[in-house]
Amino acid sequence: EVQLLESGGGFVQPGGSLRLSCVASGFTFSSYAVSWVRQSPGKGLEWVSSISASGGATFYVDSVKGRFTISRDKSRNTLHLQMNSLRAEDTALYYCAKFRDKMGLTTAIDFWGQGTLVTVSS
Amino acid sequence: QSVLTQPPSVSGAPGQRVTISCTGNNSNIGAGFDVHWYQHIPGTAPKLLVYGNSNRPSGVPDRFSGSKSGTSASLAITGLQADDEADYYCHSYDKTLTSSVFGSGTKVTVV
Image (tube, rainbow over all chains, first blue to last red; front, side, top):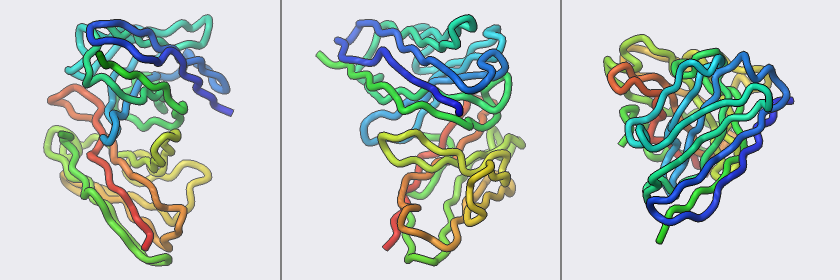
């Protein structure tokens, strides 16, 4: 059974940092692209970032470029999202997600975690 | 504001058929990129309903079906049931934004 378990969310002031993690199990982690997708309060789903199966390619939505960094640790089957210079508009439930292929941009997401909540407020 | 536009809400009686549209442009759906559909009950993990425009994952009932034409795609739900009440999102890729993109979302209500 595929499982994606997020952690690391919390309350942070504007300008602060957080590091999200997602432990994956039930599939060959190194064979698939993985991603972060967020949902702000009262809003829809927004793709944030993806990393290819090899880790060699990373992709970001424009609003987080230069502030967020996605990475993966194959030895620990873990996905990370380092979030710096956080803004109020980054407040959201962040989902870890597995793509159906190695690149992670054009194909479907077939499994999702339950999400971890990030609140940015003064 | 999403580049993939969906109606904010649709409703139907139990047993009826409803359709949800997803309208894009020539940078995304019209450029030939696949469309995928998800069912989402807020606070829970979204569920993949349709991938590659019209394919259903194992375990998804054939009441759910997807199609694509030109710069738009649609999700049809037949035999509407109470537990179909949820938010539904389309998903594709935009070559101008070089981003994976979700639709604006549609709330389905069973009246």
